Structures are given as C-alpha cells and as structure tokens.
Image (cartoon, helix red, strand yellow):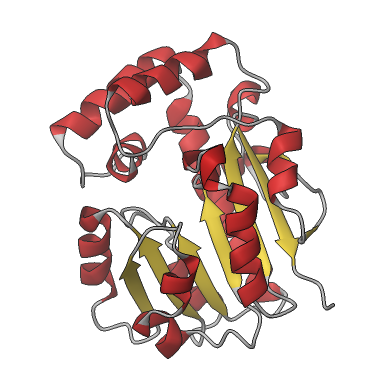
Length: 256
C-alpha cells in the first residue's frame, strides 16, 4: 500500500499492480487524492509544531516512499540539527529512502515492521541518531488502520510510549468511515481482494481515541485531518467529506 499511496500522491515509484488498485479505489472515492494531500499537509504542520515546542529528533513509522516535504526536510529546514529515522517494511520504500538520504548524516532508514517496536528502537540507526532519554517526535500517519484488533494496537502504542521520554510527542492519522457512506467499505473491499499484506481496519472516532491512551491530546484534539490547525487553503480539501475521511491528533507524553 505504500506504493499505491505513492501513486495517489502523484509519485512515480510504483508498479502497475499498485496503480491498478489505486485506480479502482479512486473510482469509488473520487476525492481520494485530495484526502491524501490533506494528510501530507498535516505531516508538515505536525513536524513544524513539534520543532517549535523543542523536539529535535523524530521517528517516522511507516514513512512510505519519499515524496515532497519529507519529515527530515521539514524538520531540518526549521533547525538543521534535527535528526530523523524513518521506518518502513516495504523494500522499495526503504531503497528509495536510502538513496534520498545518502550524504545526510542526521537521517537514516530502518527496514522493519511497526509491530516490532523493540527491534526498531534497538536498531543501529535509532541508537546512533536518537537519544531516547530526550523527547522524540513519533509519527504514525495512516498506519494504525493497517493494524488489526488481534495485533492489539493499544498495546503496541503502549510499548512505544513506555520507551519514550516525557515530553515526547505522538502524531497520528487514522482512516475512518464515520462521515462516509458505502464508499469506504467498498474501497476496503478492493484492498482485501488485492491480496495485499496490508488490510484496512476502519475505526470510529471513539475507537481511535482509545488507541491514544497515555498521551495528552493537544488542541484541537482528535479532529478531521484538515481541521487540525490549518494554516491556509492548501491544508484543507475542497470536499468536506475528504477532510473527515482521516482523523488526526497530536499528543504529548506527560511526566509521571
């Protein structure tokens, strides 16, 4: 799905099978490209927000194939000293990230599955670049809806949270069918039939909120992606429904 998302964003690092799935989903949800753009715009706002609050190191889980305004580009444009580690399980995404980061000694990529937080946090790249005794900006954008209930997403997030220092921030976006009709269900069925490793698990706003237990959500809380501190028209979709297709939130881990 990282390659399908790349196609939807207008990228060129995808295969025919990825494009075929993307085309089918777009036929069902014509505003999907706008929703993807709104999610990408949220990434930039969230990273800038964290840097302005003093965060200087970032862990981007499920970073996908590099496109415009990647985390290290946003963060290091604010402060060149920022350090970033990307994580993805798609070998194509990892290979392109390695090429993009060549020569940048303050950014690296880890080939791993988000369901292995201990392995990720103990990886050579994380140990070299991130100091877990200091606040970290943890990003999980469009990731948690790929984790089924049997894999215990609240417990998974708790394992990451336990390893982070107080003052660490979490940014999350998660797809939902709350404000959609049958389109989201039909799109989920397309993904299921594609036999992708990734299968979407839609959750309600209340269910997504439960995943974030242990983080104090900052204003405006858990809202539609386009409604989280928009800075201009480019941050919002022309379609109100597409602004609410994905929920977004930023939370902070408080001191005990």
